[in-house]
Length: 79
Image (cartoon, rainbow, N blue to C red; front, side, top):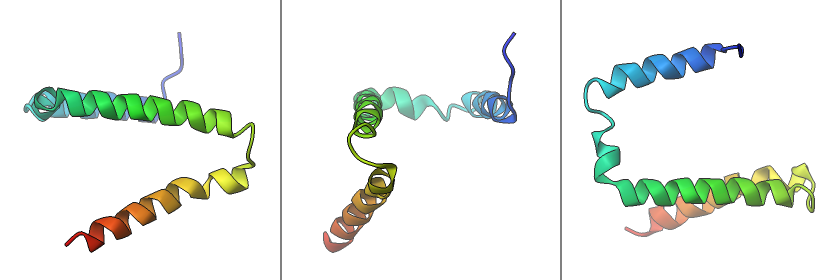
């Protein structure tokens, strides 16, 4: 049998808690968005893994932070 961590148990408890009150119904209503997010996450993880062979971690680790910062600034200027 595999070992279970506290995080595993916490995830199960959270799922049980929120699935009972219909909190996950929004996922069904936004199925296309969820599928696009999943595809983007998988693609990003795969590309990130491949980039580790090309660039050092010192360069790659700050990249998501920079992307999020630029996105936040763009979003703030939209108003």
